[in-house]
Length: 303
Image (cartoon, rainbow, N blue to C red; front, side, top):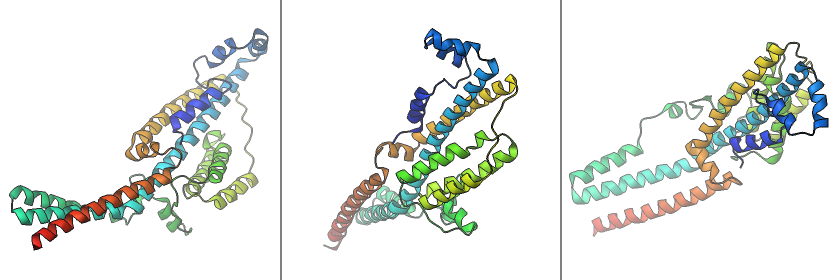
Protein backbone atom coordinates (compact mmCIF):
# COMPACT_ATOMS: atom_id res chain seq x y z
CA UNK A 1 0.00 0.00 0.00
CA UNK A 2 1.28 3.41 -0.96
CA UNK A 3 0.87 6.02 1.76
CA UNK A 4 -0.57 9.45 0.84
CA UNK A 5 2.81 11.19 1.21
CA UNK A 6 4.59 8.70 -1.07
CA UNK A 7 1.79 8.71 -3.64
CA UNK A 8 1.70 12.50 -3.68
CA UNK A 9 5.46 12.70 -4.14
CA UNK A 10 5.18 10.44 -7.16
CA UNK A 11 2.31 12.56 -8.51
CA UNK A 12 4.37 15.71 -8.09
CA UNK A 13 7.17 14.21 -10.15
CA UNK A 14 4.78 13.52 -13.03
CA UNK A 15 3.24 16.99 -13.14
CA UNK A 16 4.01 19.07 -16.20
CA UNK A 17 4.61 22.05 -13.96
CA UNK A 18 5.40 22.39 -10.28
CA UNK A 19 2.04 23.46 -8.71
CA UNK A 20 3.67 25.68 -6.11
CA UNK A 21 3.15 29.39 -6.69
CA UNK A 22 6.80 30.38 -6.17
CA UNK A 23 8.21 30.79 -9.68
CA UNK A 24 7.12 27.32 -10.81
CA UNK A 25 6.73 28.13 -14.50
CA UNK A 26 10.08 29.90 -14.77
CA UNK A 27 12.00 27.07 -13.11
CA UNK A 28 10.45 24.56 -15.49
CA UNK A 29 11.24 26.65 -18.55
CA UNK A 30 14.93 26.61 -17.70
CA UNK A 31 14.99 22.82 -18.05
CA UNK A 32 13.58 22.88 -21.62
CA UNK A 33 15.34 23.66 -24.91
CA UNK A 34 15.48 27.29 -25.98
CA UNK A 35 13.14 26.75 -28.93
CA UNK A 36 10.50 25.28 -26.60
CA UNK A 37 10.83 28.16 -24.16
CA UNK A 38 10.06 30.82 -26.74
CA UNK A 39 6.28 30.21 -27.02
CA UNK A 40 6.10 30.14 -23.23
CA UNK A 41 7.79 33.52 -23.03
CA UNK A 42 5.36 34.93 -25.60
CA UNK A 43 2.27 33.73 -23.75
CA UNK A 44 0.22 36.27 -21.85
CA UNK A 45 0.89 36.28 -18.08
CA UNK A 46 -2.74 35.29 -17.41
CA UNK A 47 -2.39 32.23 -19.65
CA UNK A 48 0.79 31.08 -17.95
CA UNK A 49 -0.78 31.64 -14.55
CA UNK A 50 -3.89 29.75 -15.59
CA UNK A 51 -1.81 26.75 -16.60
CA UNK A 52 -0.03 26.87 -13.23
CA UNK A 53 -3.38 26.98 -11.42
CA UNK A 54 -4.73 24.03 -13.39
CA UNK A 55 -1.59 22.00 -12.71
CA UNK A 56 -1.81 22.85 -9.00
CA UNK A 57 -5.48 21.87 -8.91
CA UNK A 58 -4.83 18.49 -10.49
CA UNK A 59 -1.89 17.81 -8.16
CA UNK A 60 -4.01 18.72 -5.13
CA UNK A 61 -6.92 16.55 -6.28
CA UNK A 62 -4.61 13.54 -6.70
CA UNK A 63 -3.20 14.16 -3.23
CA UNK A 64 -6.69 14.45 -1.73
CA UNK A 65 -7.70 11.19 -3.40
CA UNK A 66 -4.65 9.46 -1.92
CA UNK A 67 -5.37 10.85 1.56
CA UNK A 68 -9.07 9.95 1.38
CA UNK A 69 -8.46 6.38 0.22
CA UNK A 70 -5.94 5.89 3.02
CA UNK A 71 -8.33 7.43 5.57
CA UNK A 72 -11.04 4.97 4.53
CA UNK A 73 -8.60 2.07 4.83
CA UNK A 74 -7.64 3.25 8.32
CA UNK A 75 -11.30 3.54 9.38
CA UNK A 76 -12.23 0.18 7.85
CA UNK A 77 -9.24 -1.51 9.48
CA UNK A 78 -10.12 0.03 12.84
CA UNK A 79 -13.75 -1.08 12.58
CA UNK A 80 -12.94 -4.61 11.39
CA UNK A 81 -10.19 -4.88 13.99
CA UNK A 82 -12.76 -4.15 16.67
CA UNK A 83 -15.38 -6.49 15.22
CA UNK A 84 -13.12 -9.48 14.60
CA UNK A 85 -10.53 -9.18 17.33
CA UNK A 86 -12.48 -7.44 20.10
CA UNK A 87 -13.89 -10.72 21.51
CA UNK A 88 -10.39 -12.21 21.62
CA UNK A 89 -9.02 -9.24 23.54
CA UNK A 90 -11.96 -9.51 25.95
CA UNK A 91 -11.24 -13.21 26.44
CA UNK A 92 -7.58 -12.45 27.16
CA UNK A 93 -8.56 -9.80 29.73
CA UNK A 94 -10.92 -12.26 31.42
CA UNK A 95 -8.25 -14.99 31.54
CA UNK A 96 -5.68 -12.53 32.92
CA UNK A 97 -8.14 -11.55 35.66
CA UNK A 98 -8.89 -15.19 36.54
CA UNK A 99 -5.18 -16.03 36.65
CA UNK A 100 -4.43 -13.05 38.89
CA UNK A 101 -7.33 -13.96 41.18
CA UNK A 102 -6.14 -17.56 41.39
CA UNK A 103 -2.64 -16.41 42.34
CA UNK A 104 -4.02 -13.97 44.95
CA UNK A 105 -6.27 -16.65 46.46
CA UNK A 106 -3.31 -18.96 46.85
CA UNK A 107 -0.78 -16.50 48.29
CA UNK A 108 -3.03 -14.05 50.15
CA UNK A 109 -0.36 -11.44 49.44
CA UNK A 110 -1.66 -7.85 49.44
CA UNK A 111 0.28 -7.01 46.28
CA UNK A 112 -1.20 -10.03 44.48
CA UNK A 113 -4.67 -9.02 45.66
CA UNK A 114 -4.12 -5.51 44.31
CA UNK A 115 -2.98 -6.89 40.93
CA UNK A 116 -6.05 -9.14 40.83
CA UNK A 117 -8.35 -6.19 41.51
CA UNK A 118 -6.69 -4.18 38.73
CA UNK A 119 -6.97 -7.09 36.29
CA UNK A 120 -10.66 -7.52 37.10
CA UNK A 121 -11.26 -3.77 36.66
CA UNK A 122 -9.84 -3.97 33.15
CA UNK A 123 -12.45 -6.56 32.24
CA UNK A 124 -15.29 -4.20 33.14
CA UNK A 125 -14.20 -0.71 32.03
CA UNK A 126 -16.42 2.33 32.17
CA UNK A 127 -18.40 2.55 28.91
CA UNK A 128 -17.15 5.05 26.37
CA UNK A 129 -19.06 7.05 23.79
CA UNK A 130 -18.89 4.24 21.26
CA UNK A 131 -20.38 1.71 23.71
CA UNK A 132 -23.09 4.14 24.82
CA UNK A 133 -24.15 4.61 21.21
CA UNK A 134 -23.94 0.87 20.51
CA UNK A 135 -21.03 1.21 18.11
CA UNK A 136 -22.68 3.75 15.82
CA UNK A 137 -20.50 6.76 16.61
CA UNK A 138 -16.82 7.57 16.79
CA UNK A 139 -14.87 10.76 17.47
CA UNK A 140 -15.56 11.99 13.91
CA UNK A 141 -19.32 11.41 14.05
CA UNK A 142 -21.68 8.69 12.92
CA UNK A 143 -20.30 5.59 11.25
CA UNK A 144 -21.47 5.00 7.66
CA UNK A 145 -23.67 2.16 8.93
CA UNK A 146 -25.55 4.58 11.19
CA UNK A 147 -25.95 7.09 8.36
CA UNK A 148 -27.39 4.31 6.22
CA UNK A 149 -29.93 3.43 8.90
CA UNK A 150 -31.01 7.05 9.37
CA UNK A 151 -31.46 7.51 5.61
CA UNK A 152 -33.28 4.19 5.11
CA UNK A 153 -30.39 2.74 3.11
CA UNK A 154 -29.30 -0.88 3.47
CA UNK A 155 -26.81 -1.36 6.29
CA UNK A 156 -23.68 -2.81 4.73
CA UNK A 157 -20.62 -2.58 6.98
CA UNK A 158 -17.23 -3.03 5.31
CA UNK A 159 -16.17 -6.59 4.60
CA UNK A 160 -12.56 -5.76 3.78
CA UNK A 161 -10.01 -3.19 4.85
CA UNK A 162 -9.21 -2.20 1.29
CA UNK A 163 -12.03 -2.07 -1.29
CA UNK A 164 -11.51 -3.99 -4.53
CA UNK A 165 -9.38 -2.68 -7.40
CA UNK A 166 -12.52 -1.94 -9.43
CA UNK A 167 -14.06 0.02 -6.54
CA UNK A 168 -10.82 1.97 -6.20
CA UNK A 169 -10.83 2.74 -9.94
CA UNK A 170 -14.44 3.92 -9.89
CA UNK A 171 -13.84 6.01 -6.78
CA UNK A 172 -10.77 7.74 -8.18
CA UNK A 173 -12.55 8.44 -11.46
CA UNK A 174 -15.53 9.99 -9.69
CA UNK A 175 -13.33 11.97 -7.30
CA UNK A 176 -11.42 13.50 -10.19
CA UNK A 177 -14.58 14.42 -12.10
CA UNK A 178 -16.73 15.68 -9.23
CA UNK A 179 -14.14 17.17 -6.88
CA UNK A 180 -15.56 20.26 -5.09
CA UNK A 181 -12.40 22.26 -5.81
CA UNK A 182 -13.40 22.33 -9.48
CA UNK A 183 -16.65 24.19 -8.72
CA UNK A 184 -17.07 27.67 -10.15
CA UNK A 185 -19.66 28.96 -7.67
CA UNK A 186 -21.08 28.11 -4.25
CA UNK A 187 -24.14 26.28 -5.59
CA UNK A 188 -21.95 24.03 -7.69
CA UNK A 189 -19.62 23.42 -4.74
CA UNK A 190 -22.53 22.38 -2.52
CA UNK A 191 -23.76 19.98 -5.21
CA UNK A 192 -20.31 18.46 -5.54
CA UNK A 193 -19.82 18.24 -1.76
CA UNK A 194 -23.09 16.32 -1.37
CA UNK A 195 -22.26 14.02 -4.27
CA UNK A 196 -18.71 13.27 -3.10
CA UNK A 197 -20.05 12.45 0.39
CA UNK A 198 -22.23 9.75 -1.20
CA UNK A 199 -19.27 8.52 -3.21
CA UNK A 200 -17.15 8.25 -0.04
CA UNK A 201 -19.81 6.20 1.75
CA UNK A 202 -20.15 3.83 -1.24
CA UNK A 203 -16.39 3.44 -1.45
CA UNK A 204 -15.98 2.82 2.28
CA UNK A 205 -18.33 -0.17 1.86
CA UNK A 206 -16.62 -1.32 -1.31
CA UNK A 207 -19.98 -1.11 -3.11
CA UNK A 208 -19.06 -1.36 -6.80
CA UNK A 209 -22.69 -1.39 -7.98
CA UNK A 210 -23.49 1.84 -6.16
CA UNK A 211 -20.31 3.47 -7.44
CA UNK A 212 -21.36 2.60 -10.99
CA UNK A 213 -24.80 4.10 -10.35
CA UNK A 214 -23.17 7.26 -9.04
CA UNK A 215 -20.94 7.38 -12.11
CA UNK A 216 -24.00 7.21 -14.37
CA UNK A 217 -25.74 9.85 -12.25
CA UNK A 218 -22.80 12.25 -12.57
CA UNK A 219 -22.55 11.66 -16.32
CA UNK A 220 -26.25 12.52 -16.70
CA UNK A 221 -26.03 15.64 -14.52
CA UNK A 222 -25.46 19.26 -15.57
CA UNK A 223 -22.17 19.96 -17.34
CA UNK A 224 -20.12 22.45 -15.30
CA UNK A 225 -19.15 25.67 -17.01
CA UNK A 226 -15.62 25.93 -18.31
CA UNK A 227 -13.45 27.96 -16.00
CA UNK A 228 -12.19 31.17 -17.63
CA UNK A 229 -10.28 33.32 -15.14
CA UNK A 230 -10.46 37.00 -15.95
CA UNK A 231 -7.99 38.58 -13.53
CA UNK A 232 -4.48 37.72 -12.42
CA UNK A 233 -5.37 38.60 -8.83
CA UNK A 234 -7.95 35.83 -8.73
CA UNK A 235 -5.45 33.31 -10.05
CA UNK A 236 -2.80 34.30 -7.52
CA UNK A 237 -5.40 33.99 -4.75
CA UNK A 238 -6.34 30.56 -6.06
CA UNK A 239 -2.72 29.42 -6.05
CA UNK A 240 -2.31 30.64 -2.49
CA UNK A 241 -5.42 28.76 -1.38
CA UNK A 242 -4.21 25.59 -3.10
CA UNK A 243 -0.85 25.83 -1.34
CA UNK A 244 -2.56 26.24 2.04
CA UNK A 245 -4.87 23.32 1.30
CA UNK A 246 -1.89 21.14 0.42
CA UNK A 247 -0.20 22.00 3.73
CA UNK A 248 -3.36 21.05 5.63
CA UNK A 249 -3.68 17.75 3.78
CA UNK A 250 -0.03 16.99 4.47
CA UNK A 251 -0.74 17.31 8.20
CA UNK A 252 -3.80 15.06 7.91
CA UNK A 253 -1.80 12.45 5.99
CA UNK A 254 0.97 12.57 8.60
CA UNK A 255 -1.50 12.05 11.45
CA UNK A 256 -3.08 9.08 9.66
CA UNK A 257 0.27 7.45 8.94
CA UNK A 258 1.53 7.97 12.49
CA UNK A 259 -1.65 6.68 14.17
CA UNK A 260 -1.66 3.20 15.71
CA UNK A 261 -3.89 1.78 12.98
CA UNK A 262 -1.93 3.57 10.26
CA UNK A 263 1.28 2.06 11.59
CA UNK A 264 -0.30 -1.40 11.51
CA UNK A 265 -1.38 -0.89 7.91
CA UNK A 266 2.21 -0.07 6.98
CA UNK A 267 3.13 -3.56 8.17
CA UNK A 268 1.00 -5.09 5.40
CA UNK A 269 1.16 -2.77 2.39
CA UNK A 270 0.02 -5.41 -0.12
CA UNK A 271 -2.72 -7.21 1.83
CA UNK A 272 -3.97 -5.41 4.96
CA UNK A 273 -6.89 -7.85 5.30
CA UNK A 274 -4.44 -10.72 5.76
CA UNK A 275 -2.86 -8.82 8.64
CA UNK A 276 -6.12 -9.16 10.59
CA UNK A 277 -5.99 -12.93 10.13
CA UNK A 278 -2.38 -13.06 11.30
CA UNK A 279 -3.16 -10.99 14.40
CA UNK A 280 -6.17 -13.24 15.09
CA UNK A 281 -3.92 -16.32 14.98
CA UNK A 282 -1.50 -14.70 17.42
CA UNK A 283 -4.33 -13.81 19.80
CA UNK A 284 -5.72 -17.35 19.63
CA UNK A 285 -2.30 -18.69 20.56
CA UNK A 286 -2.17 -16.31 23.54
CA UNK A 287 -5.65 -17.41 24.61
CA UNK A 288 -4.55 -21.05 24.56
CA UNK A 289 -1.47 -20.24 26.65
CA UNK A 290 -3.55 -18.35 29.22
CA UNK A 291 -6.10 -21.18 29.42
CA UNK A 292 -3.32 -23.72 30.06
CA UNK A 293 -1.82 -21.50 32.76
CA UNK A 294 -5.21 -21.04 34.43
CA UNK A 295 -5.91 -24.78 34.28
CA UNK A 296 -2.52 -25.44 35.89
CA UNK A 297 -3.21 -22.98 38.72
CA UNK A 298 -6.70 -24.35 39.36
CA UNK A 299 -5.39 -27.91 39.28
CA UNK A 300 -2.71 -27.09 41.84
CA UNK A 301 -5.29 -25.50 44.13
CA UNK A 302 -7.49 -28.60 43.97
CA UNK A 303 -4.58 -30.90 44.70
